[in-house]
Length: 197
Image 1 (cartoon, helix red, strand yellow):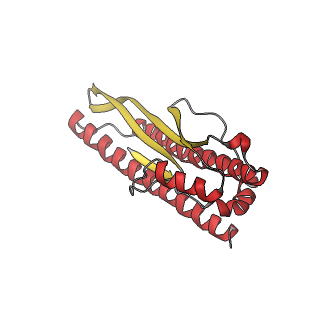
Image 2 (cartoon, rainbow, N blue to C red):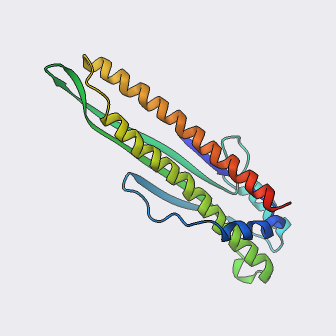
């Protein structure tokens, strides 16, 4: 299970996030190989400091055990079947599914908020949704590539070797996937830091 957290950002930094949201694109649709569920945790407060405290206390726990603003918990499940041939063994079926559980904040007093704080929250909410959707899209892309790579594996001399080859490929692609997820987070943190200078 891979956790891709979006760390809390002080609400006072919302001005920079507004610029960031303006230059991002929405991820359209969910690929067939991906199942996404979304749940929410409720935050209360009438000031940015109160909301910050609520997020830090109630937000979903990230892999580092800190509370995050939002988290996508991603699991990839490969299913591989083999068939025996006269010359050896080959993969007859390969499917990689992605299950993603996205946890987002919901502000209970949003409709009663000061207009400026409300707009700032809306921008943070849009960014958190976009950010987690990108994590899911990265996983979906890697799952599709893993499927194609598994199907392209050459015939092995026996099914034990074919299973070992498939397992090695899956481990390699999962490692590459983890690195791509970490790179996305690192790139986004740098971009936000530049916007908030």
